[in-house]
Image 1 (cartoon, helix red, strand yellow):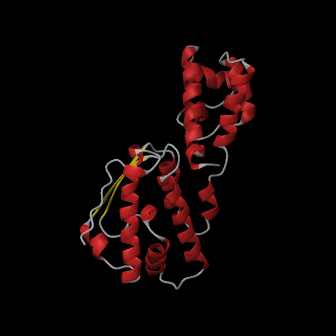
Image 2: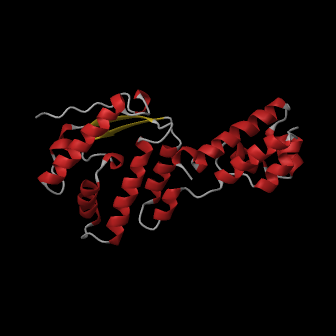
Image 3: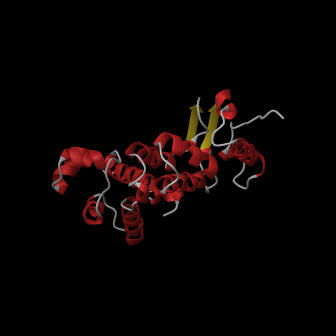
Length: 221
């Protein structure tokens, strides 16, 4: 599944559609829960997008909301199925922390992201070589399969910067971030050039200025 159609985003879309349909019928959550023989907490979790809804439950709920158009029903069922899909980053759960996976879940569904980093280049902006050097230090180990997979995760995560309908990003980096050497001088030169290149995307990327508005990097010669 593409990042722009993350399961969390689909769940939010479905949640909005179902809540709108309920309010249009002037029904309370309690009335719906009783009619569906659900607990009120289940109804609440569905409408807050904290959990998905099965297609079987949805097929019963939609007629109750007065939604009988088959094309519309199929659209909502497709949303429910998409919301149940495992995101691509879930395959890295054996090496990535639950906190990082949770961050990526919300990151993929965000419209704007701001980040301040006082020590290292943000993971989503790291080159492979820089990421490898930093991860080896934090994991206290030599290059191996685990570090390689974490580097690959960060590399794939970068696609979020240039996807269709990408979030608006704003990065503020403290000066030590660009002066602290990670790996070697060559690694740092490559990393700094990558930051410059990413900054230039706000002017010439086909996604237009919206993606990187507010992201400006200046590097002294």
